[in-house]
Image (cartoon, rainbow, N blue to C red; front, side, top):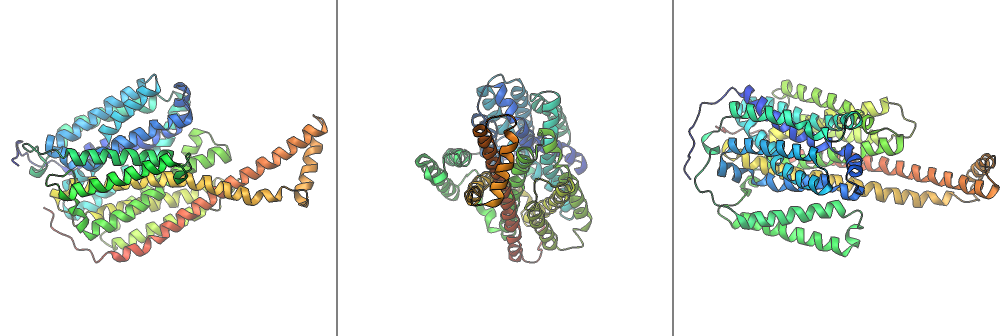
Length: 516
């Protein structure tokens, strides 16, 4: 395929960094900023909470479809023009989201936003890696990791503040200045190497793209509705999962046999890429699982509002900044496997620390494990993003980045779904085990029941007072069951993090290729 765009001189990589990070930060920030405002949006649209969740999932579905096809779209339009086009789509869609007056309009706007935003992260990663020479890629990924790791932490804080002090509309309007800045800087400071320029007549893999859409849409529905429908106890969930897996197999097969496929699966021949991506997926699962249930824990059990539950995650941002800063100056001194091991051990320890939280905890009990968690996530993701791409050539960087981000997004979706199911099921199990203590044979229960009944008798007749006392004790049991469920869930994810350590043994010694 011939190149039909002129080759220009490379641009200062630091200027390129400003351009791509403006877009990447905007996209990642939007992944969490809307979560805390979901109840307010549901109220504005007169919809239920279950219906409002499509505001989140429609965005994930649309962006997930675009991610693996970034390499093909880059060939069709030229990577720079495709990147700028995606920024414009995302920015305009953000305006429509903020102006939405109905749930249908919001969902359509979020789909459009996902279409524009899905490509921003993998393309930004590829451009940033190529802009710096091989020996400075660790520094490039430190900068990239700063945006990717810190933005999800800032999102709930900013979203909660805007929602409480302004309105939920502003969590979308705030993207507009970022979008304008990213568009202008990308036009001025991004350079397309010859292999990333627009190509003549690239063939469209309609078959693969169709299977991709069916796979991701049905899989997202399965994850989103599975817990409420009792997972495989529901016939329609079984069918949805079956269709999703069948479409996934057909998609993978089509990418193997098709000459001009959407993605190039040859990247999976690279062991460093495969091992690094696998650990990144698990780290992403732990990150999103913790980010999902920590605000719920603080709001439902501790009584925090939306802003303070988001604010409590701020130590993660400080930890991530410290980790990324340390990595940028120590990556040439220490083996990346050692740094990754430190990150995974920190993830495990901090998650286990969360597993010992209680309803009478101090603020330091939240700050310390959150700081360790942020440090560990920042170290793990930054190190492995660099290590997994170390032996990938520049010409295959966009494709590899798209494939890796697709799998990471799936890991995040699975982690979010699993953690909700775990809290729900553990809560039921603990409640079943604890309810046997609510019987007259238990002296502690009997004493508390008598004391509470006597108290309520000051205001009601004995029968009503007895029911209120019994109801209060049962509510305390439910609260304790839920607390135990959160604690157990945090512990499980901590153990999963530690179990990733043996995967580092699959890495050989660093063998850097000349990726020029």
